[in-house]
Every structure is written in structure tokens, then in C-alpha cells.
Image (cartoon, rainbow, N blue to C red; front, top):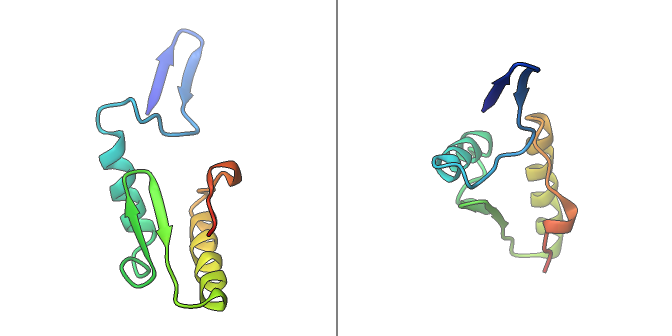
Length: 85
């Protein structure tokens, strides 16, 4: 979303979920970006990405794949909002 003012055009760097279509837009984008991983070892729910694996070794590899794919699309996970268990 871009906001145009007399000072110029400004674009958000993050998606604000207060916007009406933000959750649907985010979900659609994540489904496109992470296609191929969905339901194999991860799911997207609203603004969460859940990665699941059978072993710790698989889990580390799955996380690497997801984070690499996100980075390739200039998307980044905020470490303070991540939960690893």
C-alpha cells in the first residue's frame, strides 16, 4: 500500500493487519511464496508460519529451506516473534 502526500509517496515496509484485506493478502502471498512446502512440512495460518518435522535434523533443514525461500523474496522473520520448540 502506498500513501501519497504533498511530501511524496510513501510505502509501508511491513503489513499492518488493521487494514481490511491484510490477512487475506498476507495469506495469499505466503501461499505463493511457500508453494511446494505447504502441507509437506509447514502450514500458514493468518500471520503465522508453522514448520513441523519428524526429527530435529529434518526440522533444522526445513527451517533453513523456509527461511531461505523467504529471504529470496525479501521477506524476513523477526527473531523476537519466533518460537522454537
